[in-house]
Amino acid sequence: MDQCNFRVMRNQALGWVLAGCILGVQAAELLPLSVQVALRQAQLPPTALGVVVQGLDEARPRLAWQADQPLNPASLTKLVTSMAALDTLGPAWQWQTPVWLTEDGGLALQGSGDPRLSTERIWAGLRRLGHERGITELRGPLHLDRSAFTPGMAEPGDFDNEPWRVGNAQPEALLLNAKAVSYTVHVEGPQARITADPPLDPPATVPTTTGPCGDWRGALKLQWAPGQRPRFTGSYAAACGEQTWTLADPDPASYAGRLLALMLREAGIAWRGEAIVDAPAPAAAPTLVWPGPTLAEALRDMNKASSNLMAQQLLLSTARAAGVAAPSPDTAATWLQAWLDAHAGTTPPTRVVNGSGLARETRISPAQLAALLRWSWSQPWMPELLASLPVAGLDGTLSRQPGRFGMAAGRAHLKTGSLRDVVALAGIVDAPSGRRWVMVAMVNHPQAQAGRGVLNALLRWVAQDAPEGHTGGEPAPRPSKR
Figure 1 (spheres, one colour):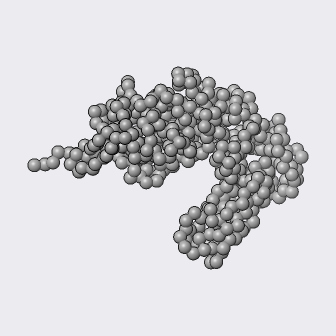
Figure 2: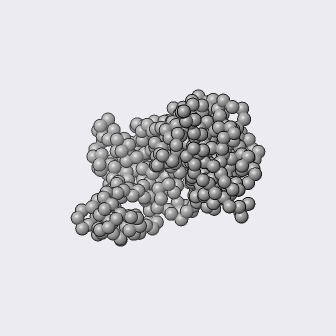
Figure 3: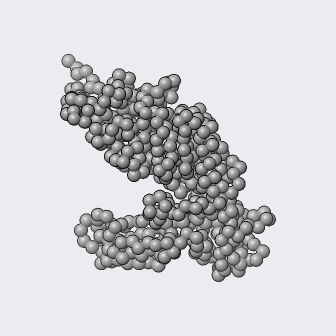
């Protein structure tokens, strides 16, 4: 078959016409022609692809290709995490962070896993102390209680050796500002000024250069090492204008204490004490509670941006609420595995390593994930799940190049997945006809990144109502008027 001369010719009257050999008898029988063409163009074998397409009003799949093959779903794992959380907690469940004024004149915070404790929310919470309690000074220590979760053994750079990436930060019960710092580069004549937000580092400068923008991050020559403050030793092209680069803080253990000291000053509360990490919170009722996001709100943040850190925070929080005492990443994954086995079955066996999909070992079949999506459609929380997913061509991880989605643009709510050897797409497609389709597609192959066109071709075919007996590609031409 590899020796066949495969050609695709474009004909305006007839649409796509396949000439020569096709990708194999089974592929010709089951895969739409446009998907076969995309596989060939990507130089991927049909065995790299697993697909299920099924109408929500149909008892059988319209397309099932390697549907029972256990595959790595990458960030499609976040769909499992989302459904498990919604099924366990409900969309209105809300994080709460208790805060105490302590007897020693200090302040205590007890983390509950809130994934959205941003600098804005911390500042607003501290301002409440000043306004409601008249606090202008703290003379005791900061007590930081992180006991709701048990720390894991993993390090930020274990997966891809890039510990400076925000998504690689490790989860914890008292997660402040995702343990991140955003560096903004401003062009000021012959120099570029780099400022940090939150301002945990003093401003820095690098020389500007002429010419096109190009790889501005690489040109800055970031020097990042654990326990040391980031440094920029390169240059910056003036043509790049203003840019922002968000990095994980290289000293995550002390991040919460340093950030709170800064936020206290900005909130008008004097403090010169020390931060005591893992100090137990008082047994008395809290002075006040910082309300966090609802589960529905957090899911939108997580799935639209495909945030690995938020997925881990969400899984640990769900496992804890489900009764797992002080869950660790491992025990939370064990809980999620049990939930998945109960709802998706064990044939073929699935494997969940974490809640984000940032793992090589995770496995689920397209048929199992499609069945979960069909089951979720009948659940009362389905609108919240659907609203959390990127919309093809409009937002999140599917916002770029809307033209590549064809009629699916603006009509498909889909979660993306991507690792070095995985690309994947799954969710609900609303066809222009009004029919709704469940679509699950995963490409597992060393050259999987070349397969994005395969997923786009499949999505365009589904948006045409997955026509039976039609080979896909362009819409069939309308008869000409005579």
